[in-house]
Amino acid sequence: MMRLDFRQSSGFNDGATRPLLPDPELDSVTASRLAAPVFVIRIDVKPGSAVAPINLKSKANVSVAVLNADGFDPLTAIDQTSLTFGKHGDEVHAQKCSGSDVDADGDIDLLCHFPLQGAGFEAQSKFANVRATTLAGGAVGGFDGIKIVP
Ligand SMILES: [Ca+2]
Ligand SMILES: [Ca+2]
Image (cartoon, rainbow, N blue to C red; front, side):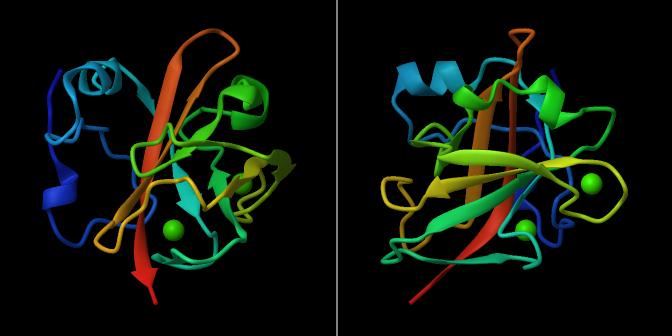
């Protein structure tokens, strides 16, 4: 599998598909689990904002769209109980999801709400990850840019 770390490159397009890579600072168990093959899905944290502002003190939920793209229909494919979000993508579970054409391209996307508290973000965090399993048992994941704001 080719490994490219797009997080090190500048100027990637918001919402573009990128391979997920283990964080070198992770413990080995977590790193090996996160290194398992995943199908990369497109997500958009706080849809409507290019780079989602995240206030670490906020008690509000964070909305995250899993986009219907590249032949992947998140509404029918994803086991919604498996959806998790956070710094590494497995920190907090979705509180609720619904179908909605978030990006107004005519197909139904999955819009989910995750608690921010417990998601593990830090002042220097620049990415949020989502992970899930499909009803067929496959692993999927995606990430999107965020910006921590005071
Ligand atoms: Ca975004
Ligand atoms: Ca759509």
